[in-house]
Length: 180
Length: 104
Image (cartoon, each protein chain N blue to C red):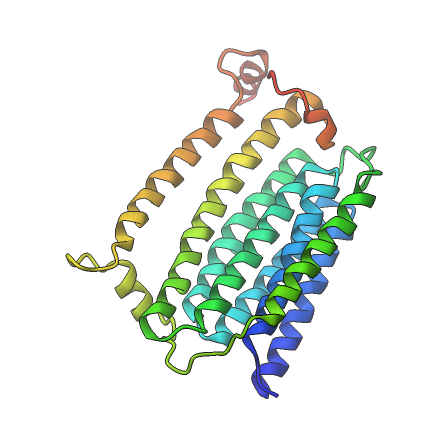
């Protein structure tokens, strides 16, 4: 019963913050609402028994990724362009279409028999890390995926640096160097 | 009345729908990327909700895959915002329609 009350409170906060993202005009307010939504989702992860994922959600999502988002919005001064309208006429068709699709999936979900299993493993730090870094011969092999993700993040970082840097030798970069 | 798995799935569905609406219908580029993040969050929630309906070892799979999803979302946000910085510098606009021509 108590779990249901906590879940309803966190779910209302998460959905309310998501609606705030949809309706806010300034990108920075949208980013802050998104952080609120992510933190309450992390609370739900802890509530259903995955505390490690909740902590990772707060550290990586609400911390690192949203820090990047707010940083880019502030660097570009995202509110400078105030001529862009929030919605256009196409939105009138998209919103009902997505709502109808969600209703269809919802009907299919509600008809499916689902129940919590009593024997689920609580995803604590010890259990999750043991499974993730199990290098045994017959193990699940998640550590290979982990290595591949390291390569993916490295290549994403290199791509981002190459894309976002000013061209060497261009007028902009020379002006910046003279100021220093 | 206790907490049911279907409640978690319905919450994930609602957040996913809102994220898709934000990503498709907003004109501002920042909101498009934030909508994608919101939808990815909802997918993680759905994974964890379903993982709790499986016994012992099978339930661990649903709690490890979201870790990879989070890392991929980090890579996606990194490259996405680098592209926004690149094009915003040329166009001085965050309207998605002004990004239709990407010849640099």
